[in-house]
Image (cartoon, rainbow, N blue to C red; front, side):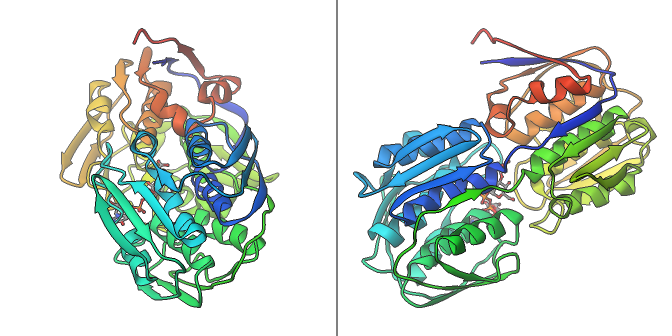
Length: 421
Ligand code: EPZ
C-alpha cells in the first residue's frame, strides 16, 4: 500500500486540469448495458473505481477497452447478469448495474453492498422503485434477486434524494413500458449528465436536475459516443488546497455552476474566486487569514457531503469557529481524530463538529479511511509545519487521478512512496 509524503508551507501557484467526473462515469458505464453494440466514452478519469466497474462489466460478458480518458463498452448477449460480492464490496457503485440488467435482461443477481466506512448506505430506495415498476425482489444469502420480464412505468416517491437510487431507477425506467415519475429525485449534476447520455441513446427523460424526473419508456436504446463532464469534487478539492496554502491557482475545465455551493462558502470565508478562461481562478491570503464559516451538508444544490472533510481542513486554521453539520451520512467524521493529531481543535457531538481555528498544524503520520477523508489529510499536510505521511492512499486513488502528479507542478512538495504492507 502506497503512502504520500507531504511537506507543508508552500503556497500553490499555476494551472491544474480537472479530470472527468468519477460519479458521472460510473453510472454512465453501467448504462452501456442498456444498449446493443459498442459505446465510446471520453474524458473518463484514470481511477481504480473505473477499473472496478469495467471488471464488473467484463465479468458479465461485456467487452471493454479501458484506455483513459477513452473507455469503450460493447454488450451483446451477456454471459451473466450477476454482480458478485467480491466486486461489489470493493465499490458500492456496482449496484448501478441493477436497474440496467432488470430493464434489458429481465433479471439481476446483485450482491448487497454491505456497509462502508461512512455509513450503512442501504439500497432500500433502489429496490422499492424497482418493485413499483413490477420487479419481484428477493434477498438470498446477501444477494438481491430482481426479476421482471418487462418493467412498467410507475410513480415512485423517494424517501430521500438518493443519487445512485435516482440513477438506477432512471436507467430502469428508460426501457420500461409506459411513463415513470421519480418524485423526490436527486438533483446532482451527475444525474443530469446521465439523463443526457440516456436521451442520446434514444431515451425520453425530462426534468433531470429537478426533484421530479419524467421518463417515457422506449423499446430499444442505441450505443453512443460521449464525453463526460468534469469532476466537481476533484475541482473543489483543488480549490480548497489553493485557498488553504494562500495560493493563486487556475482550476482549468471546471464548470463553475457545478461547484457554486462550495464556492459560495469559500467566498464567505474570504477566498477570492473568479471565472477565467473556462475555469475558476482561486486566490487566497492563506487559511490563517480566513474567517470560520458554518456548513451543513445536503443533497445538491446544498453543500456537498463529498466536500465536507476538505472544507473542514480549511477551517482548522481559520479565525474563529466553524460549525460543520454532516446531515447526509451518519459516520463521516473519521478525518477528525487524524486532524486532531496534527493539532486541530475540533469537538464532535453526533453529526456536528465544532472547529476552532488553531494557530498551526504539525505534520504527522495520518491514516486515510475513506476517499474524501484522505483528500482532507493531503490538504492538511500542505499547510502543516513539517512532514505529513498519509497512509493507505489506495482510498485516494479511487477518486483522484495521480494527485501528487497534479499538485506537484503547482509547487506542492508531495511524493508517493511504496508502503511496506
Ligand atoms: C453518491 O453515493 C456518491 N457516489 C457519493 O460519493 C456521495 O457521497 C453520495 O452520493 C451523496 O452525495 C456515487 O455517485 C458513485 P446516496 P450514493 O444514495 O448514491 C441513504 C464519493 O466520495 N440511502 O445519495 O450511495 C444513504 O445511507 C462517494 O465519491 C438510503 O437510506 O449516496 C445516505 O445516508 C462517497 N437508502 C443517503 O441516503 C437508499 O436506498 C445518501 O445516499 C439509498 C440511500
